[in-house]
Length: 255
Image (cartoon, rainbow, N blue to C red):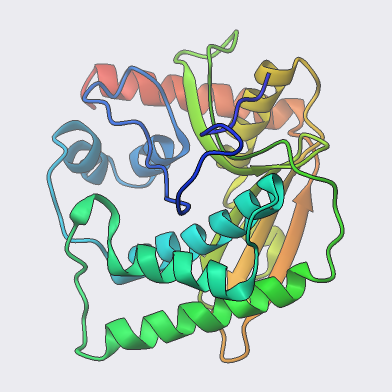
């Protein structure tokens, strides 16, 4: 059964829920661990094994703050709370003012912080305008933390899904700088979406109906683009299992 990250009716402003801290990279595999390992093993070693501190990149901080605003909206819709634009922008402002884990944001220019804050407000306003035309039943959960030991995989899985819709469809939000080619952009997130599908199937005992990527595009006139993907094919599932095996062997052998 899918359980929410916090029980319905709990109080407080929406906060980003970071990946569970662990000093053992073989305890589980998550989207961020796989992405870091497959893209740059040296970076993976510094970040996930040695856990070396480093300043927070402006784009990453911006994305997390926007995510906090969207999370507030989804939780308010889920629980019957305040989903108004002022409330959503307040959640964004709170997250923007207080970086995750009290990290220092490495701003490149003196005016960059104010410019990115203004851009986030405009982007969230565009998101809320888009949502006015979306009529859907109450979701199953928001910021849903799931873990599973899936047969055939070398390691347990862990994931935090932004939104699980009433039909069990996983939704993930992405902030992006330019209008993407949706099929290509979605392909780059297949590993993450396959992991989410496996987690939802394990939690519900039902086949995954697929997933949804919502791109918030930071163009001069912001856009909200939605791309739906079907449930992962057997080829994609086999490829994912192989990637987890490569990750497990590489970490175990320090290669």
